[in-house]
Length: 259
Image (cartoon, rainbow, N blue to C red; front, top):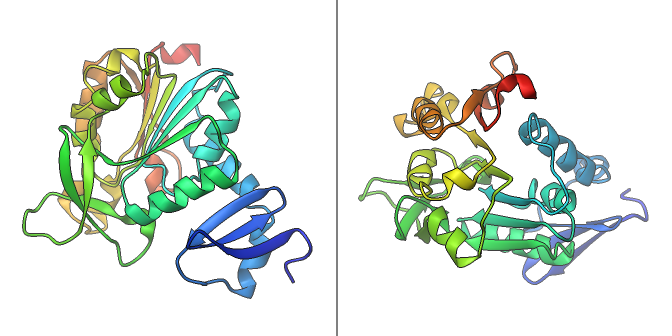
């Protein structure tokens, strides 16, 4: 049913699909079903289409650009970012959750994304450790918890200021942030870097607050004021039918009329 272009194997502790020339590590358990097969054949195309739709509304990647992918997940956007900036560009892919990071790292290795540096950490306002709560729904909803009494997986935390210093990042063409309610802390930890960021898109999660997931997800007002205070012009997509896309806040260095 999968046809000759698809193989499944257990590689370095992860069930992994090879679809044509692309590899997709999935997880620790074999959880595939017949209904998945047709979608697999277009997986790389879907990744590229979604990345363009979510993040490239104003930014046009160029050969040699540096992109920072904060909340890289399993590499869904990292793949397109890597190919867009070419061999002379760089992608710093940051993911906090241990299993998601293992998948991301293997994804980069198998797909030979040599210009990507995967880092396992939570981006916050100070170095240290934080805890992540695992969602009962989707792994994509895993979030840092601030309540000292909360349970969760302990992960290392750092700031973007520190990361850029450590990796010699002088200029950031585009910064994507999608970290499920931790936007406030992450932005406060990148004050020194902000003058070097040309464009940014922060995926806020106020819609999760509206769904009853907690007030910690209501960060959009803070994000907008923070970006305005650092010289960015704002753009958004208020008419989009998808609630999570309506919460994307773009920070642009040039007047909007120039785009």
